[in-house]
Amino acid sequence: MLKTKMIGSETIVIAAEYIKAGTKISRLSGEVRDESTKYTIQTGLKEHTDAPFPFRYMSHRCNDPNTAFIFDEEPWACVALEDIPPGAEISCDYDTTEYICFKPIDCWCKSEKCRKTVKGYYYLSDDEKEMLKDKVSPAIKMLSVK
Ligand SMILES: [Zn+2]
Image (cartoon, rainbow, N blue to C red):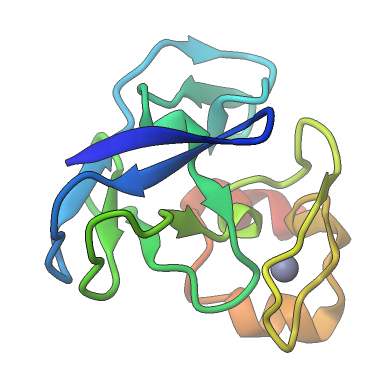
């Protein structure tokens, strides 16, 4: 369903076939670590789960990403939010799962509300947090009430 593509020295994930809206494109069933890496998704207060290949190369988009995680089943699944044509880049909003990103990431998503640098939910403005409040993971919700 997914495959990687090189853009310069960067690896991204694209749709290998037509993906219908609502399709679960990946599940987080990897090894759980107590520290984040470039390829983990934060799944608990101090739990970071290895994202499977090739899903781990998914791009970030600040607004209107074409996938998002659903947190009401274990392990969490990532779902297509819209019909995704073959060859289209797969994206999700890192700030919905990472409280503090492994390292800051420059964003060129070109959306009107691009955050330019993605550092994790902790660093968002109050307005941005309000916008994402229904999309963030249970781990982010727990961390943000502390
Ligand atoms: Zn952006």
